[in-house]
Image 1 (cartoon, helix red, strand yellow):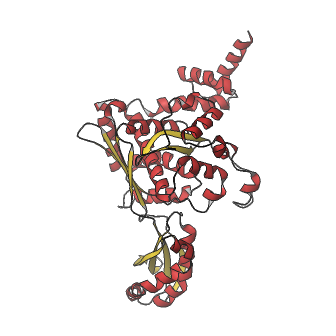
Image 2: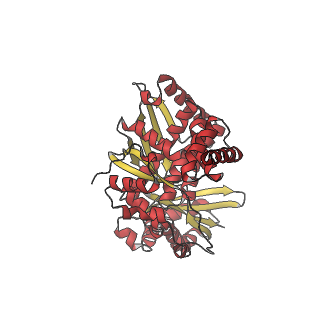
Image 3: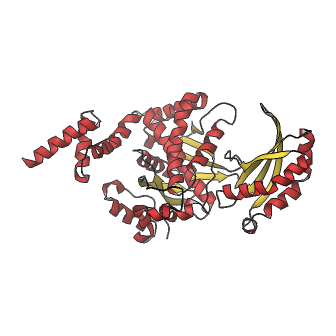
Length: 423
């Protein structure tokens, strides 16, 4: 069955009703997604990290309207921040008119670094290591025959001579195609295995043998056309372009601009059980790849007056191993997405990042970020003040209308509503 991500009015239903509607739209039985509601059991958590004493829950919402590379996707997003899921869904609706999101990839290659100290002739050591390329690749591949059988494995080596305050280091990079894995365990194992031979060839001693989270050989690119009329007209389009130019030129603005991108990216990465810290480190290092911190996305105006949004980020995500396999909610999230490869998952992650970023820039250019954000935040405030599910909406509406979005104001309104209901 083909997924239909266009689910209008999903917010008007209860959580149980939404789960059933989302499952039906994805062609799944409701029980297939029950782990998104039931979450992780304590005994399961005890096998995932050390010294487990409990768990912390993060809301999982479903972003709608996404068409990515011609396929509709219902996207699970794990986040505590109001407006993120709604904003991404709305931006995806605006892009949907022009075919949604198109993506491309540079490959599935991760880098393992082997640091060599105390070489007498660093440049000579570099050359010797390059001459031993085939030997080192064979030694690395011997560590993971399963990966090799699935078409992955060591692909190349490069070597740098790196001056540091602690002397000159020789740094070997082992390039590994990790296929549908995030890849950390595979490349770390290979790096440790080849280290003794690297030290012998270089005439030094190895120290660090570990992957780099600067995954610039594993780039995902996303592009979408956002309709000018649906965005709010020519002035909003021009202002979004100006906001984008500001972020491209100024690191202070770029930090917040990229945070908006990561609101989308991290939410999908977390929901699918992938490593949020690795992805965030990779993205922010990519933003600083030219020596200055810059925006990860660009928004331009095309010949028809629409916005063309583009994003390029390193995304080390996988479907094999780690919490993606161990966490039942992560498994359910992947099932809902319907992705079959790490590249497809990365495409979704990048598309959501671009959508979220566009939504934030549009809000800033149009009505200001606080209007929509605080309206949704008011519901959280109402719940914090003790409002029940039936009372949250009324309390939130009052404190927004009165522009008193705070817990004390919510408590006052809640008391008034309850007093009125007793009269």
